[in-house]
Image (tube, rainbow, N blue to C red):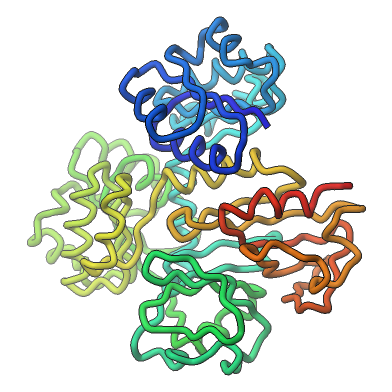
Length: 445
């Protein structure tokens, strides 16, 4: 598939990297020569120096032959114009990153009219992920599939975990589930029954949502209800998150340094206590009882501030801390300094865009383990290689595993004897090198 990516920032680079790895035909348009050079030096893709809003540049990139255009520059207007031009010139699908709430929340502006098939708002996507984590506070990552019927949680085992050093085949779970992957020492493992779980393992568990609490107990995790949340940063993520948490009935407190921002968001939020102050001021944090928070979330635009204040909040007693981290080199620091979760708008945005890139009838794509693997939800097509045979006879790629099958209202954690029927929803865990092969299994012959 030919894809044109406009903008070689962090999101654009990540998408180009993933597609290049899968041998897609990728053209990157970037008007900054330094960013263009970084792509050329690191990726096997075609690059063009210029503006994605230029018809001549789009023609040079081969827009008439492209199946997908992804516009992820820093400028909303350029992204929207590029998608509009792309549609007029014949590209099949378009994706635009649009941040300004005036655009994304305005019902008078139709994405279809602008030629955009998918509008991505990184800040909104990030806020929604943090909102999910507030509901499952014991998890490092959580996602839902099949309209919420299936849940994936990523949890870290401790040295006191009752399953530490046990083989998977020896663990007695009260409900069906599948441990689809283990991340150990930065290596992603698809485990088999004889594999052991070890302290500090990051374990990815897939199960019916209503069964997950009971499954987590076996792994040594107890779900505790989140009631109050403190947010540092009144930017777009902080605002979207506060608005989301208000609707869910949480007690929300937001700290923002800029007085004008405080005034603006306090008028738009109905049940959030907005405080003007420096979040790195320990006396302010103590005075506002940040240590009593069930959840402390740092989402300023400064990674260093997010890291520092999250450490302070944890030291003061906050039960769970989340820091937004934009720079990937900081991510390994999170676990070492005691912060519970790092969220990356770049990876979350890339995951949402990948749904339009993957072949087949894709419902959703989640990047997990720092983009070391993907969880893909697909609808099985009639007459595809995956339907009508027992799973043990499929010769499915060894670097992928079918984690769950949803048939109507029934969730099946499959065994080798199960059969996938046409129109089943199937959740597949796959390492990058297996994704192209997985896609082929679900396409019609």
